[in-house]
Amino acid sequence: MSGILVRGGRAALAAVAACSLGLLAAPVAEAGAPVAAGHTAGHASARASDPASVKASDPVGGPLLKGGRVVVDLPAGVPRPPKITAKAYVVADADTGEVLATKAPHKRLRPASTLKTLTALTLQPKLAPQTVYTASADDANIEGSKAGMVPGGTYTVEQMFQALFLASGNDAAHGLATLNGGVAQTVAEMNALADHLQALDTHAVSPEGLDEDGQVSSAYDLALFGRAALANPAIMGYAQTVSTPFPGKMVKKGKRRPTFELWSHQKYVLNYDGALGIKNGWTTLARNTIIAAAERGGRTVIVTLLGAAQGWQEAVQLSDWYFRHGAAAHAVGELVEPGAPAVEAAAPSVAPTLAPAPAPAPAARAQVTGSGSGWLGTVLGVLAVLWATVAGLRLRVLYRRRQRRRRLAQQRVVGPPRRPAPTSAPGPRPARDVAGPRLPVR
Image (cartoon, rainbow, N blue to C red; front, side, top):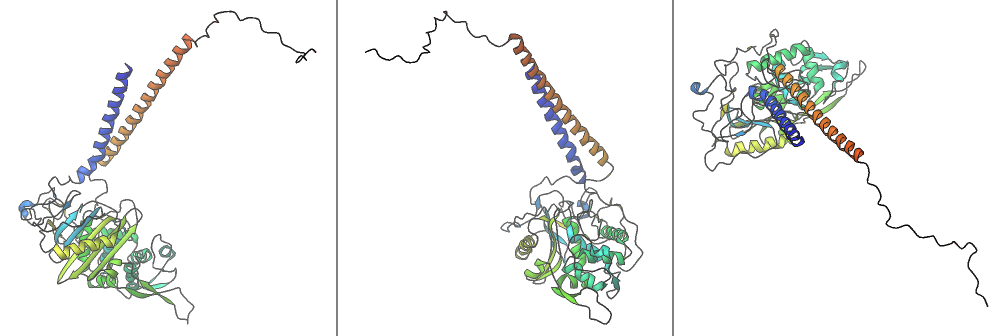
């Protein structure tokens, strides 16, 4: 009976574990099933630009841009992209928009400071370069990387954009957002612009790209941001700047305000031949992220990475692969144009202009753990499974404790074994000589 109970308990625990895995995998299935085919696919019939091949369930950019495997379409003899540590990446031709290699392009991950590219795309067309802003304590005390803005110090919009790209200054991002009407309004405009660009995996929570709950993007969306930035000469000017003087602390009237040199933190720009920019990032949770672009021989590549152990070095490896073999590779998807519907069933997106305009209402955004209202049921299901698991373990402990008590009770009834009786009575003990040793008689 005990063996049956133990085996039954193990079977129940296995069933509970299976249910747990099923429930936890449900949100992933909602976001899009993984690619079932191999790592290569035909390029002629799978292009997102082919209306016959686009379905309502396909991701933005084409049906092959889903799942977590590396997807390429290469002729015989063309090597695959190098193996890197990034959780997701995209290699695309900036001129044609063709995606030539990708891994988990729509996986929603933390973007870190690459999100500042979306901040710049949102604010640069609206804020005049010579507009002067007075920094606050909130700007100076913000967490993370800072350019060195001081409370009460005055800075032009141009200087804050330089600080945004060279030093990845969170103080500059916060100051620009404040000048735009506040963080909330700026974030709403960022999300509206992301919708307009069809960066539907992106949900901005702050203009700095810090590890805020719910702040996510994807390698595909970062490629859309990078392509839009390449079309903005002012932003590319900031992204390619290596160093620039930046105002220091305020001084008394009549004295000259000191400056210090801001140097670019973008090692891809500093080390890669033909690099154009655009923005790197790093946080504890996001790891290394980057939007990189380079031009050689009249061809321009966009490389985006998320969750990489080495950011700019891995971007260099993928850039080298593009310039050596990209011309022979077939497209597996495309970077869609702004405002154009990806599929017929897609909801209409907000289409703000890039000129100054009233802030549009924030659009509904994609969430990290799936879409729709099924998240509550998933959470309750997981909690129920955890409760059942704990209850099953508790019953098993109680069963073993009861078995141990039964064994102890049986031992007390029988009692401890008695010592065997001696076979014969012991003889008389020899008399003890208390007088000590006797002396010999002479």
